[in-house]
Image (cartoon, rainbow, N blue to C red; front, side):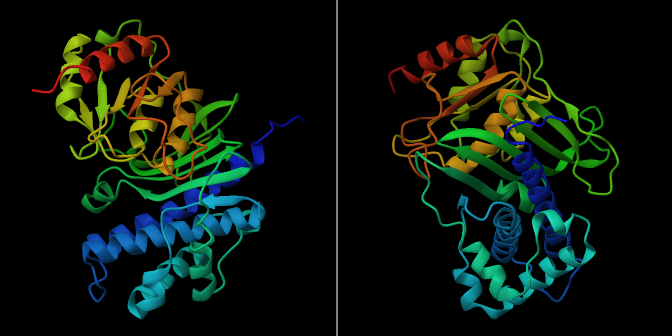
Length: 349
């Protein structure tokens, strides 16, 4: 039986984000919903514990399966080494997830103690670059969405010589059936270059098989709908509204946090995702786009910056050569870029 070039990497990435999402979901329930009344449930503590725990579990999986690979992560263990309460709180959550054994430890390893937990977190300190195998990780992409019980993602992608080859994303609060927004939630998305993109429930006890996903086949931007960031500080909502009008789009925009936007349009929930520059100096972080971009591309979409250039993931931790991000089906992407350029080139009043 033949297998694709990065089949194992895709499998490990899926298991890694799946296990991490079990942790982040558990932390949300206990910290934010308040089922654990004796713990510090401040937003800062919750964010730190979820981010650091997710990073520890994902890196544990990557180090177990691919010990020579590099990892670009967002976090370090500094606060855990200084504050015993946060370290003990996080370890208790991680140990509970590991003890349940819902994700196969033989394939993605385990974490033995608090020291190893902190050491693993600090292995996500690579600076990125043009050559080699580099994983880009965002353990809780969409912090505010996570804290409000909205959309967030555990997002992971593999770069090989600065080209995205694998992406995996767990979206714990995304409806499994888009037509049933109040139904069961938790979706796992993944993609491998040249092998398509798939979705399946992220619940490790589910027996539902992965199924291919595709962007909606539309021939005109006017048929589409926007998916954009909740926070105006992340994207220029006013300019995006002008672009929508220029393209003849009348459907209301869907706003959600995190790379769940990539996943949503990849499976046809929406059609166009724009993240326009909010300042001349801001540089997008690679971990905000590596995992999601390949899922969209393998579902039939095109991902570029606001000028139509491909995203360059080989310049370190940020997209230094790019401004903004525009995602759309291949059939309309150039029309969208034309409208984006016209809007961004308008003189400021």
